Amino acid sequence: MVGGALQPGWGAERGLLECLMRGLESFLHDLPKVELHCHLYGTVRRRTFMELAHAAKAPLSDAEIVAFYTRGPQPVGVLRVLRALDKWLIRSPDDLYRITLEYLQDAHAHQVRHAEFSWNPTGAARDSHIPYPKAVQSIVRAIRDARQAWGISARLIAAIDREATPAEALEMVQWVVQHPQDEVAGIGIDYREIDRPPELFAEAYALARRHGLKTTAHAGEFGMPWVNVQTALDLLQCDRIDHGYTVVDDAAFAARCAERGVVFTVVPTNSYYLRTLPPERWAQDHPIRRMPRMGLRVHPNTDDPTLHHVTPSGAWMMMWRDFGFDLDELRGFMHNGLDAAWVDHGTRTRWRVEFDAAFDALRQQHLGDEGARPQ
Image (tube, rainbow, N blue to C red; front, side, top):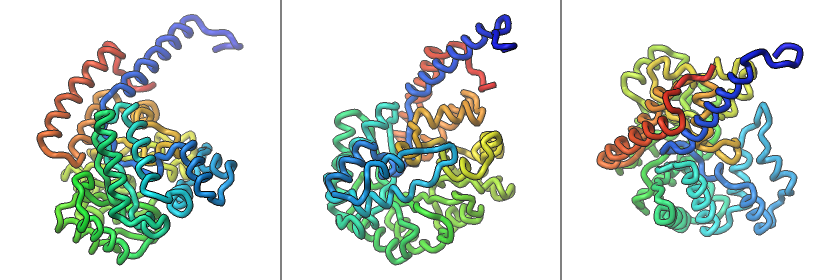
């Protein structure tokens, strides 16, 4: 624009760009997806949160709850919200059933065909006073009802509370082992990584592996050193890594991860980098942008969708719009998710054929021959 007037041809170019963006949004919305990194308590709808708070007579005002769900340009973390759910809001197995079913309904609306989501049994038992057997039965019931209603499959990741003790972590894995459910595929570890390195929980992970459970772990989040990722892979023997961004800080280790084919379930809306990188440099300097260039396999996820103000489709859109990956690279990320999912080989093979066919058909339907990366 010059002096408030459109230059010749600028309006046509803008129209083409807007058309492309609408087509891309439709393409990414309709694309079949797997979601591998999502926390159940980070999916709770704001209305549901308020209703649970009112029912429990929790010491939270509506204004405080609105603040929980407000995400500014430099967002604060969400751990306080997750703790509030354990401490005050989740009071019965039926509450767990409700939030699980609502999450899977919301995920299905964005064409998530398979979800693997984390939940912290220690907090539920300690703070919500819901024993593991009753809690997990309600979550599993919701998983089965969601599959019946919408065709979405799901697995639960029983997550170690890394702010608790190693003994509590071991106890939690013992619960999982003593009360097996097909829908509980493995364990993870979440909450604050600072001063809580992965090696604290080696015994719990060893027990999980002995009983055939899959494993993942949050590592390299919050700017924590790349050696936490190394420990999660070499000592805990994780099958995949949640976040893992600081892997880029050691080129030799990153090369080893690339050679091993480790999949990193990344989160474009991760609050640490939104807080610590200048807005004008955020997309250029974010580790997610660098990881595939180093041969690392990534897969985008929502983490805490209602708190991060992101949907599964939106997370994929950020990979294109913000980080500059093209459609062929997005196809590769889709394959990474399928390879990292905790499903049997036959299911994985069938989904790969189906997802590839859908990718090609949707690309033609919504974008035609267009496939450019953002300018």
